[in-house]
Image (tube, rainbow, N blue to C red; front, side, top):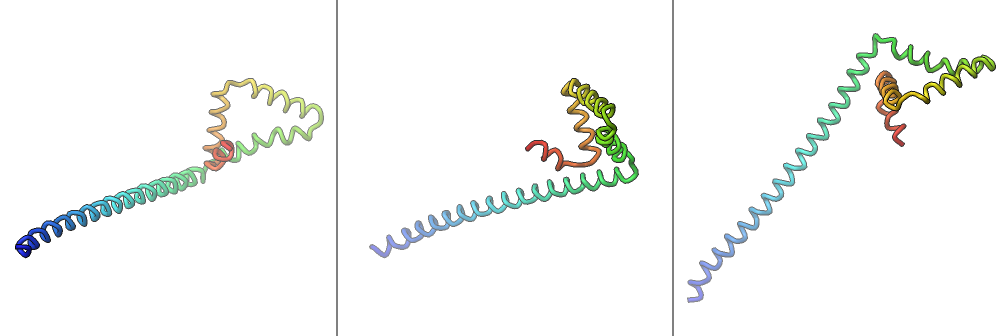
Amino acid sequence: MIGALIGPLSNLVGSWMESKTEAQRGKASVARIKAESEAAVMVSAATSTADWERLMAQGSQNSIKDEVLTILFSIPLVLAFCGEWGRTVTEQGFLALEACPDWYKGALFTIISASFATKQATKFFRK
C-alpha cells in the first residue's frame, strides 16, 4: 500500500520541482535579455555621441568662424592695454551686453558653444 502511494507522490514532487526549475530559468532568461538590451542602448548612445563629434569636426574644417570668434573675444583683452580710452570702451561694451535680454545672452552662449563644439564647456558652466 505504501509502495502504491510513493510512486504518485514522487511524481507530484518531481513535477513541482520541474516547475520551480522552469520558473528560475525564466527569471534568469528575462534578466539576461534585460541586461543585453541595456548594454545595446549604452553602445548606441556612445556611438551617436562619437558620430556627432566627428560630424562637427568635419564641418568646422573649412570654416573661419572659430577664428572670427577668437578675434572678437580678444578685442576686450587688447583694449584693456590701450589706456583709459580702451578700458572705457570695454566697460561700456560690457554694460551694454549686461542690459541685453536673457534670451539673447542664451542664444549667444549657444552659438559660441556650438561653434567651438564644446559640449564640455556647457558641463563646466553648469557647475
